Amino acid sequence: MLSNDLGILAALLPVLIPAGIQDWRRGEVSNWITIPLFCLGVIAAVLRIFLSNDMLTSVMLFAMSVSTLAAFKGWMGGADWKVLIGLFGLYPIAGFAALIIAGVWGAVLMLATKNRNARFPGVTAFVFAACLTVLGKVSIILLN
Image (cartoon, rainbow, N blue to C red; front, top):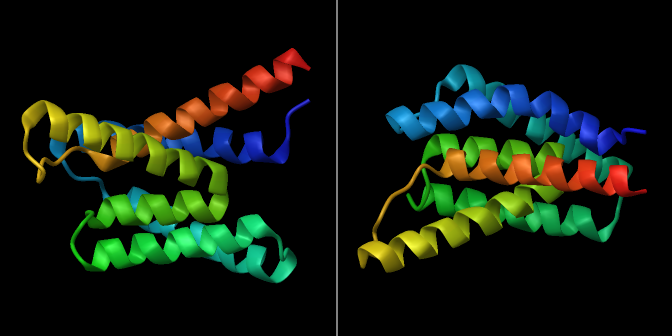
């Protein structure tokens, strides 16, 4: 039986995968992908605030705030920020996984290039994390 979370991620992947490919190849992602994802994520986050008052909502809001601050400081690109906010709003676990994967990817890249200002395609890292989340969710469902 599929859960709602898996359904959301399954609907997101056909949108996210082309975004990750665009970011990998060109270093930018079309606004046709990122703006609707951002808007849906903000709407979902607002609904989550009003409909559930749990710890995940508080942590999600904190992560969205920190991501927004990082974007305004210029520490991440606009497409990265929009996709990350969309992920946090629609499925917070995928958002947290995206931060972890991007952090590991960035740390490995900095160590490998010895350049603390090394840049990498963040949306591609976020998509990879979302795919891992789906894989983990499916494996849990299949093992039960």
